[in-house]
Amino acid sequence: MNTHFSTSYSALQGLTLVLVGGDPRPAQIARLKRAFGLRDVIHCPTRQGDPSPRCFLSALHRPDLVLVVWLCGLSRTNHGRRLRAICNSEFVPWLNCLHIPHPNLLAALIHEHRLVDSILRRRASLMAVETTGGGR
Image 1 (cartoon, rainbow, N blue to C red):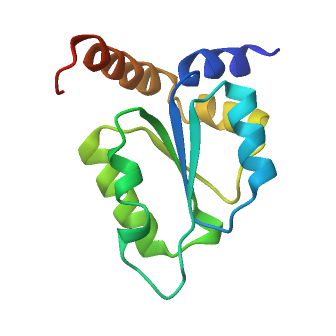
Image 2 (tube, rainbow, N blue to C red):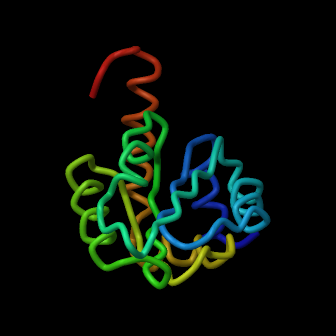
């Protein structure tokens, strides 16, 4: 296991990843879940005719959400604009990818975009809320 992958694995393990855009690909989604030991991978397909964030808004407010991946090659620009604004306001790390990434690509992107620290901070805040039972 390479260093990037093992660091990403420990940061993501046991939490939820959200994919926004594109069509459902159950095998690829299951591969991400297995590879990183995720609690869940939620895929929110977007429709070209609907520019609203309605299809992914509830997924971005999950209490165990650790990372959002916008499939920018498979959804509208407005979806990405709104997604980034929501993630930034909720302090949720996010990144762009053209398609559902292979686990090795996702680990490389996390390191390339220097998201490990942000993901670990998000993880620590989620764990603190879980242990105290309180809000943010």
